Amino acid sequence: MATAKFKDTSPYVKPKPSPPEDDYLYKKYLEHFALKAENEPIIKVALFGVGRAGTIHLATMNSNKRVQLLYIVDDVESNWQSLRKYWHLDNVTFLNSKQSDKVFKDPNVDAVFVASPTYTHEGIVIKALEAKKAVFCEKPIAEDRPNTVKCYEMAKKVGKPLFSAFNRRFDPSYSNLQERVRKGEVGHVHMIKTVSRDSPLPSLDYLKVSGAIFHDCLVHDIDMITWVLGELPDKVSVLAHANIPEIKAIGDFDTVAVNLHFPSGTVGMIDLSRNSSYGYDQRLEAFGPKGMLQAANEQFHSVHAYNELQGITTAPIFYSFASRFMNGYLREFDHFLDVVHGKVESQVKSKETLAVSKIATACEESARLGKIMELTWTKDELPDNL
Image 1: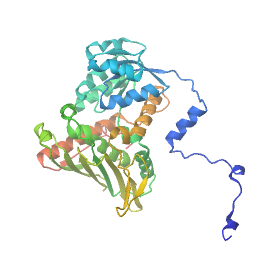
Image 2: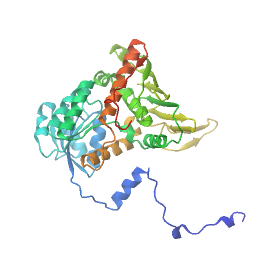
Image 3: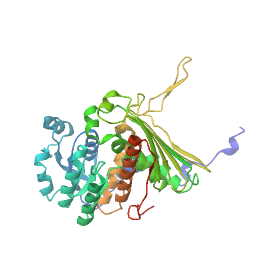
Image 4: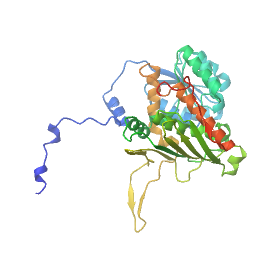
């Protein structure tokens, strides 16, 4: 009876609690349950490339009531029939890249999603913008800075959004950490770290056209650190090595360690690998005088097993990017649609994308030259929110 005095009134007579703002999936459920309909036109889209990232976007398009897929452009024509059958794409037109002008000439197409190989991005982006289509592009937008600038200038000229897909910004854990750092929860950040170890090992065919580890993988970690801090580095120092012979043979690296120094005194560290045997290892940590915030690895279930004297065993971490960052992809997709409708400004600014590319280039130069690289930033290069 010692706790009887703590009995409370019935929860039915209390005010109904509100769900946490961060519960993105429950908020979407409530929208569906309430049949909440907004008076917005359906965005008609074309998808270029149905590979690693394109498959994720195709699945989202197929289940998102805000879009209608009109075209798929992919050069692996042997897959067309299987794609059509699996996804029930009876009303979708399939084209190869040589036929893609049909997309740009079709006034019904509102937006183009670019998930084709890296070397094709710039050409598709420019043609889509010239045709006054909104563009969602997997990074990089172009293979070098001058051509990336040209793409953004074209977007500004025609008044259409050009969105660079840094999906990790939309991951619930990472975005929560960023918000809390910006509110001063740990004070001035003294140290910020990311761990980014890929799983499974990408194919050599992919790596040969990926743009190499600095502009394919490292850009995500650079973007995450600079986005969390709201600051750009003034020095980078990088050590890198190719432990896998086939990766060495194509002139790339599979293991990279990056140190970054920021004008405010913050030090950043990035631990990057192409091959993690135990799953997709993704961690983010910010440390300051008031404490630490950490986004840890996530698992696909929460069961703990206690067997004999083996200790406690639990599920592995997510196997790859498609599962670990699925919520980020979904939130990113909806954000882009909101940008197209003019409801919000893009959370990924052109100057931020260009800054990340500049830092990645400096990191590659540091690794190949064995030198600390200093970075200077003109006023025009600094993002407006820094």
